[in-house]
Image (cartoon, rainbow, N blue to C red):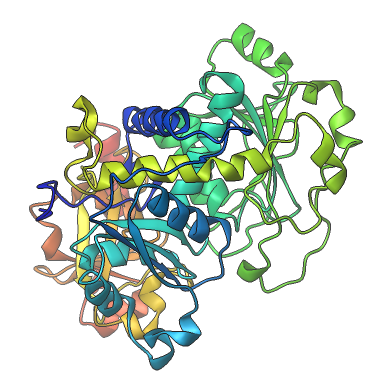
Length: 485
């Protein structure tokens, strides 16, 4: 509990830590700040300050370069009347001496009342939240998520379109490496938007993001002519097939053929452009989509706002700046009132009936959580996950949520930190010393017996740890699924 406010610590690691109603509450408060503290010349800009946060300090802890996120958070805190302390360059902080993130957040929590963190490792914000007694806001972690950017994006869309539901949004560029895109598509799906992916070659949505959209947010996939459901191309990594989708390939919530046909004819509400995430890729940029005046002449974009989280590096032509549909500088300005609203809610500064909904922390998952020491068994397969950061080894664990959506289907693991998924692994039973490569066995693991199991990367690891193969598991499961004895 916060000594100053009596409000339980709440962290924001993912856009999915917020309910739709909480997002709407943030927007209502952001709009109230725009109304009360306006710039006289530009309605989308905060032009004055308040003293509501005069007793509070924000710490900005940035292990990666940032302009908009860091400065808009600091501006938001200053506009609220609070103070800011910042560590904007890891080369000039104790990180250069080898200090762990887990230690850093526990120290900084003594100097501030909440902190925003940007880090190059996927899942770093989740790790920080585990060790911080003050609210942690994810300012972008690797290629995982950037939830506050998504709040700014959604607020911009709502300002332009009045409502978020039933919008048709085209997303262009590096959909695989962009953490902004991953938060954005989850939020769009939850608000019932229709998403049109327009990826650069080889930069399609990660498979685990696509699969989550389908299974958890009820997205359906269809092409412009209705002839296909989902297309895959050769996997980029083992067990990680990428979703192939072109400009005519859409994510939809509609079910009837007439509704889907109507949605296909719907004009694009916004084009969301992203840069090539060169810091996430080993190879150099090849062919990349470019949005310019010629592209926007297509009639389906006649009413489309153009959004970009910025910075841009050639994928969005400067000629678009003078187009009335260009909304990206306005989008950047909304970062201040939106983050003011988030900060005031996290600190318990906003008086209102909705404050109680911001108590608690991470929403408790109903999924079974596997939790073992980092030295035991299986690690996350994502090489950029925070679990692979050497100096964080004493503080992270092998933690996975068990995904068993359908007992007739094979299960998989979702990393607790970075949320990437694994389809192939070995399950071993501590009590009976057997192991199986059949992930159907996940269906038999519960919160009550999860400590009886270990996961391994392959059979040799299981055998080396003293386990023996479990025979005929798949055949037995098939008979059970078919209702046979």
